[in-house]
Length: 96
View 1: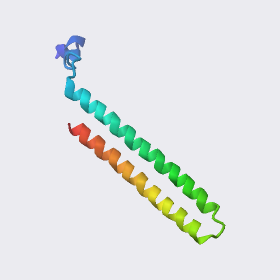
View 2 (view 1 turned 120 degrees about the vertical axis):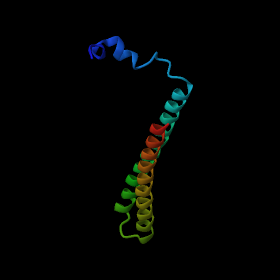
View 3 (view 1 turned 45 degrees about the horizontal axis):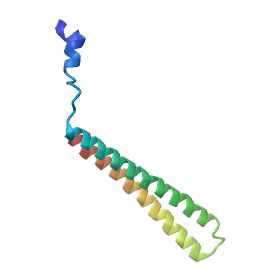
View 4 (view 1 turned 90 degrees about the vertical axis):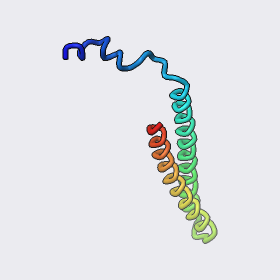
């Protein structure tokens, strides 16, 4: 029981620091997916803001209102898809 409190035994559980090629690749792949999904989320949020602006400035024009409503709907769907994709990527990467 005394050996568990020693630093050399605890640090020995971590390993030599050589994580291998597969761990480097999965870390890189996770970063790429997170950046792509984050970019998709930012774009969807920008489309949502722009569509809301179009909706506010439509002044009763049915075509502009319809276009803004579609944009808002698509932006919300895009945000939901980006959030689900983020969860799926994290789940898959943690399983590897």
